[in-house]
Amino acid sequence: MSRHYLDHASTSPTRPEAIEAMLPWFGAAADPGRVHTEGHAARVAVEVARQQVADLLGARSREVVFTSGATESIVTATWMATERGDHVVLAAVEHSAVREAAARHDTTVVGVDRAGRVDPDELLAAVRPDTALVHLQWGNHEVGTLQPVAEVAAACRQRGVLFHVDAAQAAGHVPIDFGALGADLLSVSAHKLGGPPGIGALLVRRGLRFRSLLVGGDQERARRAGYENVPAIVGFGAAAAAIDLEGEATRARAWTDDLATRQLGPGVHLFGDPDPAGRLPHVLCLGMEGVEAEPVLLGLDQAGVAVHSGSSCSSESLEPSPVLEAMGVDASRSLRVSVGWSTTDDDVAAFVAALPPVLERLLALGA
Image 1 (cartoon, rainbow, N blue to C red):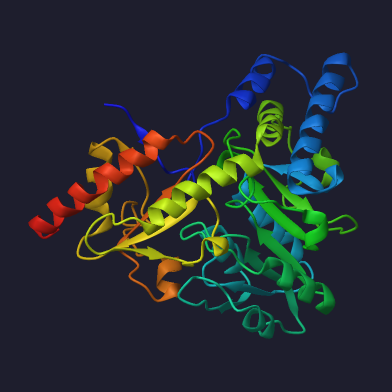
Image 2 (image 1 turned 30 degrees about the vertical axis):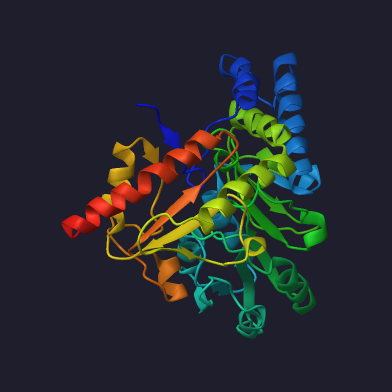
């Protein structure tokens, strides 16, 4: 049976350009911090990759700090900013990495509407004189809803409050211009856009000086200690350079828009913004009436289709989705379909063909 992978929002297959770029470095012994020829070659490779990532995100290369992924970047951003104070503001639909990093501090959580979007006025009303940081994701990881990051960035700048954007789900899928945005910190992860796992970046606006989370060396201009993961960094850069942002986003939007308007089975409906312009192009969340998500996931998997549930019912926690709960919708009955650079028409067609019989069978069984 052929397999059809539609879970790119979790992780995307590594692009062939990234694999090819990494291969020579797996067998190399080359510390970028050394002055010998091998070290110099590694340093050049790292800095080329840094520029490639910066180009994708509209940043200066010196603003790019390589990390192990978006989770580390988010925790680091929170650690850095809370040197200035202990109060943190965030939306209720933020990723668990943001929520849990913020929970270590004095936190104000702001609610969202039924599309999953925060009101910027409400978010900013939560800012206090002792607020150190405001978090806001670029686009939601479960329902795809885009957030008013530019408006919040401008308001935070006026108030002198640091602003962090979790762009892990948006990077490589929508245009990002860190310089024009005016945010102070921005987190991304390579594996979400076709880069290798275990590498990401934290963008730190030029001129900001923070304490480091990881200490013990002067790597990354003394902002993140530890021997650089040269193969992964090179692969991240190659993936960033290989992205056809406009073409890939156009194809993704066509697939998700088509799915959003199809009759995919009894009781299937859209979660998130009904306006395609208000959603990330590659993420679609569907609600299902009368069936739990886990048996649907298993039924689709048996049909060769890999998707995810917006809730955590298929994980060890067996907890409903905090994102969907914050939106005021059924948090235990959803499917997230997400496409990416390697998706084909056949993958989407397989999902369209597989979902209705799976739902009908489960409804007949009372699942």
